[in-house]
Amino acid sequence: MLRVLGVHGIGTHRYHRRKGSPGEAAVALATDWFRHLGTAMPPNSSVDLRVAYYAHLLHPDCGHPVEEDPAMLEPAEQRLLADWVTLLHPALAETPAGERAQQAGDWLARTHGSATRLFALTFCRELQVYLSSDEAREAAQRTVADAIADFAPDVVVAHSLGSVVAYECLWAHQDHDLGLLVTLGSPLAMPGVVLDRLRPDGERGRPPRVARWVNLADVGDIVAVPAAGVARQFAGVDADVPVTAGMWEFQTPGAYLRSTDVTGMIFGAGSLT
Image: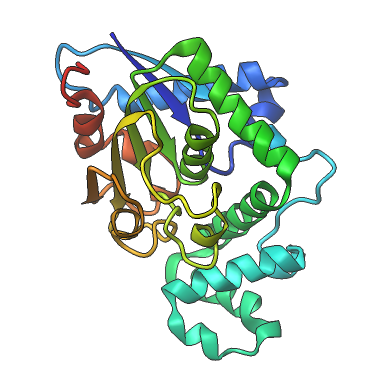
């Protein structure tokens, strides 16, 4: 049986709110991941799937709720939003600095819909907490490291912001060998937003005890920018594969986990069957 550890992306605090504890949230999230993954698993395969849950560490209960207005974001979060969306829509660079976040949100809503704008604001809030708080950053990485130590997975599958957490964790906690790291819809290569703020400084490559690293991204995934950037920016990436997982659900892991391109990588990794 293949042991797979998932590392989730943004927007999963609702599992903690609904279930009341990180442990129960992890179980509920793993159940949802398995529901999707099971639809595309190769015949005669089996999997033990668990999820390392860290969302509660980036979403304090005292925080004000995310609304669809970029003005509700803190200044640093607004800068993240503006810098990110400028990569998607370079004309935004001509907008006065004080207006760029609002214009970025408006462009997302016009181009991709209001749900995408709300997703983007949530992404910027959780990403900024992770990148700016050493305590939250280290605690999220420790959650993944503990799950790896307890579960000894064959494969780690990390989605969106979870790919950043998993990548930094595997550099910071070089305690166990890992056969395969699969990153999905990853922002790791996003210049000026994520790439230049990664730890350890100066290290851009496959973590030392990871045997193989495969990155997959939907061709329209607004988080996975620039296209094919992970392979260009990080040494030791074995494959950087464009896929068509489905819009707009690329912003959740479900479409990726239902993709035979993804499950083919997970279950077809050499002896990992």
